Amino acid sequence: MAFSRDELMEVNAGRALAGARNCFVGIGLPSTAANLARSLHNPDLVLIYESGTIGSKPTRLPLSIGDGELAETADAVVCVPEMFNYWLQGGRIEVGFLGAAQVDRYANINTTVVDRGPGMPEARLPGAGGAPEIAASCGKVLMVLRHSTRSFVEKIDFITTLGHGSGPGDRARLGMPGAGPTAVITDLGILRPDASTAELVLTEVHPGVTVEQVRAATGWELKVADKIVTTEAPSSGELTALRALKAAGRSAAA
Image (tube, rainbow, N blue to C red; front, side, top):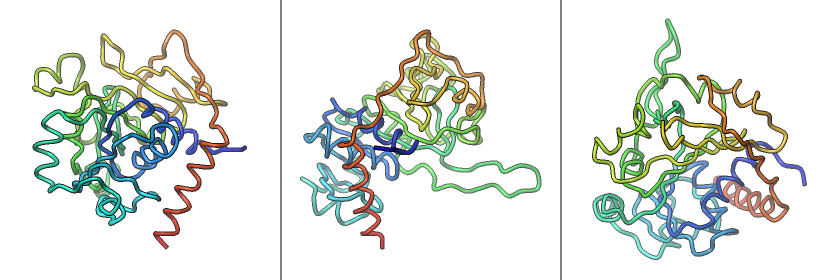
């Protein structure tokens, strides 16, 4: 069964949630991955959205965090202050799943503004939402985004959400209880922070992708693990489930 690079990314992102108990889900690619994981790999996964829905079981990809499908299929709906003060900042959420417009070598995230160059106005992005609190307080953070020199940059234009700051010790110094980003899953491979430097290192490539391709798509001199693993190609079951979720989401949007 043929597949696209986006599908490689989404399937691997879904696999990353196979053993998780609960996940605070960002909309877009993170939501695709989390819903795929719940439908296929981890049926007991509790999906939590920023709008206050706990245990959502959408039958399709939600159109936004305010999609009524999330509330209608949830185990509970709480107010946003309770979601953040009690559930998130109280340390009750295991995994946060985020996207990004830009990311740097320490997995810091920009979703606020991008410098488009001399004579051009800044590109304004959706902004922080709950991402800073998610990255600070969840047990760990997974990230998913497409890999290019526009998104993986030497220096991000604005730090919306702190990943590992400028290196080891920054999170602890700032009193952030969570482990921060532990994996960045892209359409080319998977990067993980080095245990001693906190800098992102390429650990896995997807089928048909070379290390040189990943390095060429990264805006800094990307370090590579001593042993590179190739991820498994998506199974027919994974692709069928993913495409069904997307098709149902498109139908709802139409």
